[in-house]
Length: 446
Ligand SMILES: *Cc1c(COP(=O)(O)O)cnc(C)c1O
Image (cartoon, rainbow, N blue to C red; front, side, top):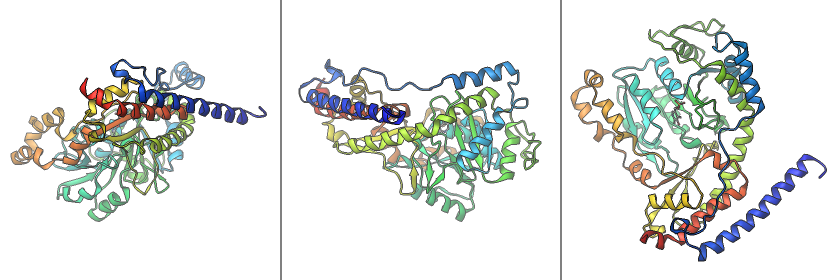
């Protein structure tokens, strides 16, 4: 081994050779062997790569903050440095760090002056924080149905949801894939509506070569522990608009602006909160950012390879990307499961059978437009004081999302950390799907 690179190549090819063996053994097993759910031998026993990851870099950074006594961003420099570094990494003109992703969305809406009586268009297929940020402002969420091929908001259905009360469109780049930003930005320009990108799952994802979060009026990120860039909790807002970024800064700092050039604005809405990021979070993010690009590349390579394997299996339809998506962050690896190709096994039994084979997976979101807490919020006293009775009673009918309802019953998710290991892990995932399909008859009866 002349250089570390040769050594790495050798290790990679050794891993590939052993993966090929594993795949062949697994295939042979699939033909004769029983599904693990019925007592057979699982395809895999080792855990997938652990998440989050940290080493001395994080330890030294955190201890540095601890010992400095400068735990709050007013005293230290970590959060300021993080904001500059994240803006640099994404190509954004401005970055405002906040306590978490929900705060990034709440702050963006506040800075755009959105409040009671306003409507905000959001996808039905997203994490509950997207809708909570709207409800917290007593604005009315308007759900738009999902494009099941991409798992993203169906941009063709946005126009029909716009009324004279629409104040913003908040697309989500779900799973690290990218919503159809050409169509959404065009609607925003034509209807004079700000676009708030919920990029909480899409760090380093790109649309036509530009980082997501830098295309709309603001872009919101989460650094919660499950996310591809993490500080346990954390968030950030990107914007190309200095005045809007200044209002965001002021809102998350109790209505007080940054005493720096370009940020002399205060939040004119007259309300604010303390949603500041701590120096500990800033320090963790500076360390974690040194790993983000390499991890993102590994996820992309593994995901592309896995898509090739899964696309061969009848009844498995990996999420497609729009043509403008030039980089997918793969926060989730998402595919649809079609029951007919699995002999009526049922999606939930498919998930259990996969888990028994040693492949953790889940069925993802349930319909957010029908979520009990959303329904309760719309029926609450506060909403009743703001919105006419007919509007509240018509909420379910107005927000029906039939394609999303169907998708929620077909979706299968793998988490981003499962894409961080060797390519042979992808072979095992695909082998488990093939094995469950081969055993579907027996599984369906059990
Ligand atoms: C995680 C997430 C959020 C909220 O971020 P937190 O940091 O958990 O507050 C918002 N939207 C989406 C799509 C998310 O995945």
